[in-house]
Image (cartoon, rainbow, N blue to C red; front, side):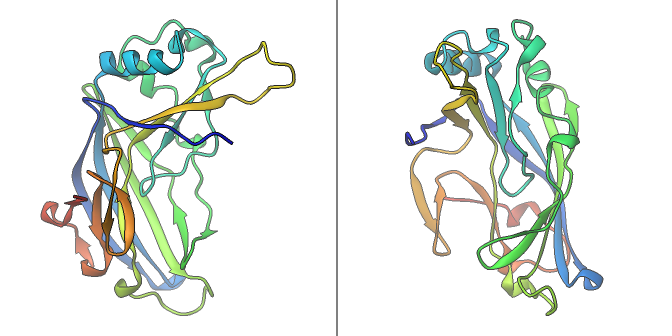
Length: 222
């Protein structure tokens, strides 16, 4: 499998709006809810997309997958289908993937904790896409009570995985990733023992308390 290509896209941004940390004793879990604004420069997006997939937005069997670690988990990818050739701004682009039905909301095992994303809520605010997202954590054994000190670094990604379909290759059915465009930089830095893309917005989960999450608690990996 070819190594993925990640590229920082000029004009792609993620801005924190608000958030809360809450305890749920009935499920032995802790949940955060955050609202962020995601933006991109559509002209730069088209230029970068076409550099890796010529006429990317013109082919109905090309596809896109938002990668929103820390915010939501998209099940698979969305084909352009009949939107191909008609996508001329951010709103049309975001419309490919902003339905909550595309996103998972079941418990899954992580490395140290069980995690569950909520169905994200998307609202168009000007040219930006505002998302309200939730994520729950609980112990792997599902019985003991999780503590704030158990929380990991909470990363917030905003990236678009661009996939190309090549119908001329016999037996090739699924589209393949050609590039992942993101607001983060392309190199890594270490944060609390983890490797994060430089520029990633994140929260040190262990330093939170229940209640509102202040803007000053949203840090940048550098």
